[in-house]
Length: 622
Image (cartoon, rainbow, N blue to C red; front, side, top):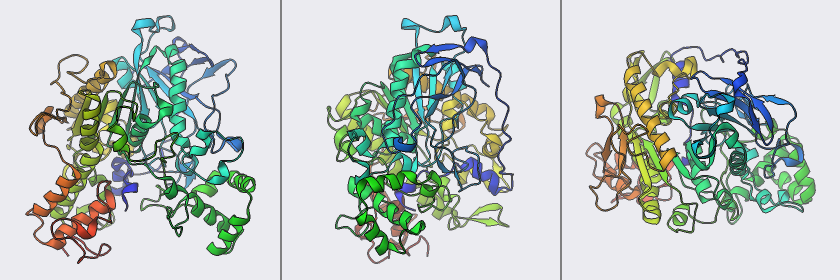
């Protein structure tokens, strides 16, 4: 699996399936009762919500853009029309088109298309107050805008409940939908015709949806008691990558004032990769726009094979091709793409360095320039065992006895590989960007590592070791929301509840204090260990906060950092990898998964190189 597929299904949901716990969707609940005190008057119209599970006020399914359908497909989002009457904001808007998966919390058979193109809605959570006592003026609350993960191809803004974070920390939480997959990111010359804007021509429609949501928030959030001059964007995985893109985008300038990237990445896709054929002199991605069009032409019998499809495409006028593409249903588009091993994530180019929405060139080079990005206080971090989430569901790492009971094929091989994969994620998603940003913008750069690993032993499988502090496992702690349904709740037990609830309170306190002041400090109550900024003065100076329970050392600052080069060097010297073949097997996994080392680097990896061990066949311990 290539590095671009790093955002995978949430482990908790799949664990329950693995353990023969039912995976059928929960029955849809009845809409909640309107709370009259939730009446709010916005510039788009009046709306009412309800009291949520954590005592906050909640407003769901608020439109922040016109439905991007028909001629508005593959166009920059437009402001929504005002509504008449009072909008009953009681249910989430539709998820954007995607393949159903447990990660997104979207109903539907796993791997089958679901969602609707009319999906640009957001949700607001705010402390419960009388309609006449909504905070105003200097009393307005910080706004925290959540950008969901899911590889930018699955998920929706309503998967996590922002009520506890809002109610307990006195902040306004907004969660948003944005266009996904080929409807969110698609570039082709036929879509850049007369009447299109530079934003339309960028192909970065999902990114522009996030910009539009921030514009809506700036205009309307005062109605909910939020401060449009203090907005924090935060997201995980692909959502954290989107946070980095908003830091880079001139279109997002002044729309947010702090940024938190949880297990993110800074890489952008060049336009040739996004558009070209695979056999062009400058080749494109196998799922580039041109390659996708060829597949569509073959699928609907407009052409018999690739050569015929190329000829047919060459004969189509740009306007004809644009209309052809817009006539295709979302289902037809989604079914064109290759799927990953979990049958839900499709592989296609995303977040394009188009030169307008996102700048040309390397993201870190932009972050190294004071005028290269939207400089705001930032918080970055990764989880100690990121990749164990993905490895757990691969048969070469974990076998199932009677298709149910998970057992490691080779525990030593599993752990050493996971360790280096997570280290290089830390290098590229946290330590590397933090070091660059610290040199550019000074001491308002904060970094963490999430270490919680107190999962239960299930069916004889020690999940604290098999999964540990895996990818995405910090999100319930950030929201204080552990009720993820019967599938997800399997890793949360009575035994681990006291410590995880305490850690969740601490993490929410740090996150909210960062939203208030631009520094996590000692948390909202001033009672936590001080979270110091990244200190570049010496190798042993404090760099990041370790987030864990007292059983494993608790909250503490650490100075141990990694870089891509140091990870490669550590593999070379690791006594757990006694042979060059063993080392090359780890290098191969780094090339398949990481952003700091790829297949082109594999033959010369380390001191001795790996040319003697073919990339497609080498495996640790063989």
